[in-house]
Length: 503
Ligand code: NAD
Image 1 (tube, rainbow, N blue to C red):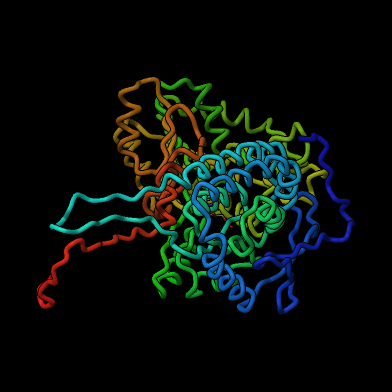
Image 2 (cartoon, helix red, strand yellow):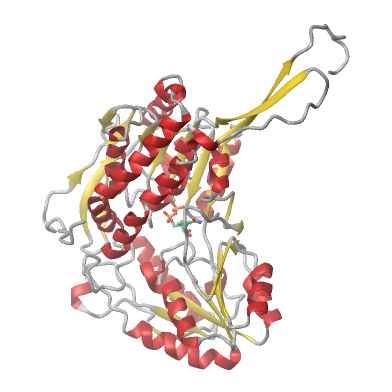
C-alpha cells in the first residue's frame, strides 16, 4: 500500500463515473447526472448517473436472470472461492478505494485505509461459509416419508447504503448475501458513489458472473424505485430511521423482506469506580472519531455525578487539542462533516440544545481558521447541563456533539440509558465486573462494550433494538438472512392414500 495519496487539483474537471448494469458500464437512460462534492475543498470532484425507473428495472431484471445462468449452477465451494478472491482483489486495490471514499465523504484517509485493510476479512469469512449452508433431515414426521430442508437464495436483493462507510457497510451485506447465492442491485448514497463503483469493477475480475452484482446511482428517489420494484425479494438498508421507515413501507407493498440498520443515540455510561483516563479516551473515540458520523457514536455521556466534573474537564481538554484538517494529512485527527446540509444540521442542534438550557463546555461552532474555511468543518463540541428529555439527548445529530447527562446511581443510569427510541450501542465504564454484566444485560442495545467502544467484526452479530433496526448483520447467522428455507417432502410408500384426508 502506497503512502502517497494525491487529491485531484481543486480546479480539475470532475471525474465521470458510470454505473454497472449487467455487464455494461452505462450512464442513466435520461442522460441525467449528479455531483459529488469533496467536503474538504467544497468543490465538485466527481459526477455519476442519476438512475431512473428504466435503469433500475434493467438492473433488477438482469440480476433476476443471473440465477438461471452460471451463478445459479455454480457449486457452493466454487462460489466461496470467488468470494474470497474478491477479498484478495480488494486488498490489492485498497489504496485507490480508500482515497475515493475519503474524497467523497471527507473521512480521514488513515481511517479509510484501516477499514480497507480489514475489509477482505469479510469476504474471506463469508466466502468460507458458502459450502457450509447445510439443511436438515428432521426425524421422520410420519411413516414412509423422507423430509429434508434446503437453504435457497432469497433472490434479488436491493442494497441501499449511507455515505459514512460505504464499502464496509456494503461488505456487511454483500459478503454473506453472495455466500447465500443471491443477486444484487446496490444503490450507494448520493454523496458517495465513487468507491462502490470502483469496487464493482473487481467483481467480474473475481470471476463472479455478469448480472450478479449491479450498481445504480442516484438519490433517495432511485432508492425508492428499487425498494418498490416487484422483482426485489429483499431490501437490506443502512441509513437514517426516517428513511428506513419509508423503505419498510415500500417493501411491504410487495412483501419484500427487510433488514434495517438505522440510527442511534448511544450512551457511554461512566461509573464512579471507572478508570477515568481510559473512559475519557473511550468517550473521545466514541463521539469525535469520524467527526461523530458513525451510527454507533457515543453521543450521550451518562456520568456519575461524583466524577462528572473531573471527566468532563478531561474530555474537554482533549477535545480542544483535536487536530482538524485535511483528511489526507497523516496527523489530522478530525476531518470535515460530509456535506453542507449535514453541517447545517449539526450547527442547528447546538442552537436547539442551548435554547433548551444546555451549556457549551467547548466547541459549538465552526472553526475560525482560514485554512478550514472552504471545508464543512465543525468544532468538537461538548454540551453540559443536558436533561435526557431534551431534543439534543433524544435525537440523532450524526456529528461531533456530545451531550453530558449526570446520574446518581446504577438504577437511574440504566433508566436514562433506555429512555430513548434507539438501541444500537452502549459503552459501560466500570472496574466492578458484577456491575458491568448487570448493566450490560439491562441496557437495550444491540452492541454493548465494557471498558471499550466502537469495535465491530465480521464474526460478531451487529444490529439494533427498537428504532435502530431490524435483523442482524455479521456473525454466522448473517448468511441465513439471505436465504429462504424450503422443506421437501418425499413419499416413500407404494400405497395411494385417501385424497380427502389431510396427510
Ligand atoms: P439516509 O437515510 O439519508 O440515506 C441512506 C440511503 O438511503 C441513501 O442511499 C439514500 O439515497 C437512500 N434513501 C433515502 N430515502 C430513501 C427512500 N425513501 N427509499 C429508499 N432509499 C432512500 O441516511 P444517511 O444520511 O446517508 O446516513 C446516515 C444515517 O445512517 C444515520 O442515521 C446513521 O445512524 C445511519 N447509519 C446506520 C448504520 C447502522 O449500521 N445501524 C451504519 C451507518 C449509518
